[in-house]
Amino acid sequence: MLTPIKPKRISDLVFEQLRDLIFKGRIKPGEQLMTERELAENLSVSRPTVREAINRLVTLRLLEHRQGHGTFVVSPSAEKNSLGVPHDLDVSLADLLEVRLGLECNAVMMAARRATEEDIRDMEKSLRDMETEICAGGLGSDADVRFHMAIAYATKNMVQIHIMRSFYDLLFYGIKSNLQHLYTEPVTLETIIRHHHDILKAVCDRDPQLAYSAMREHIMFVLDFVHEKNVS
Image 1: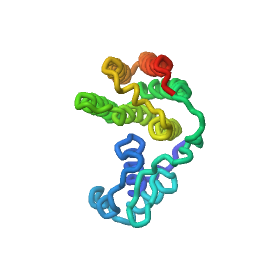
Image 2: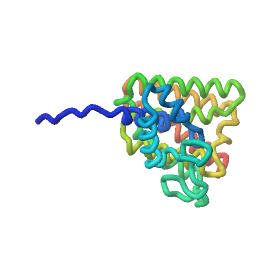
Image 3: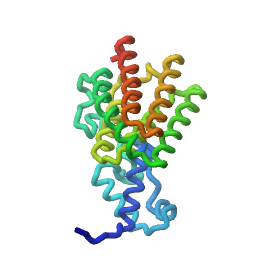
């Protein structure tokens, strides 16, 4: 009935820490990673250990080496993203939002059951960052993505996390007509922020059904906005 417990190698721990920073959006697509020496010093491990972890992330196409420049988080391809959907395909925002209904309503239900205190802190920080950016005259869209990726990470389902990351690459980096229209109307922004607070509260309360309803209300609001404004 029992199986031997195998301790994790240090390189596995380094790999998981860097992978999770990418998944959570703490290190964004196109952003340069610290050098091996800097990472080794910050993590108090050897450079070969860091190199092994980085090579695994390169194999997974989360990182890429650029000769003479360093190591970077992979950005969506000019031709296709990791979902395999060509960027020049006639994909509308409505198409993507309809997919979000399935992906994210399911994700937030899992998050309400499985989120750790650290996951909740990540959501709270992303929401604070979003509000701060908006108050400063920005769009807050990057923080918005981090909020939704924090929910995906809280599912503890690696398939869900991979799909969500690829999906957000397509939504926010891949198509020419993006959601910027949504972030330019103050009344709309107030509603979006309220939605995010409702979603976060439901996750904090460990209420999957309420979390599902809050996420559905949010995405349907955005979808209705897209139809009303005829945003492509």
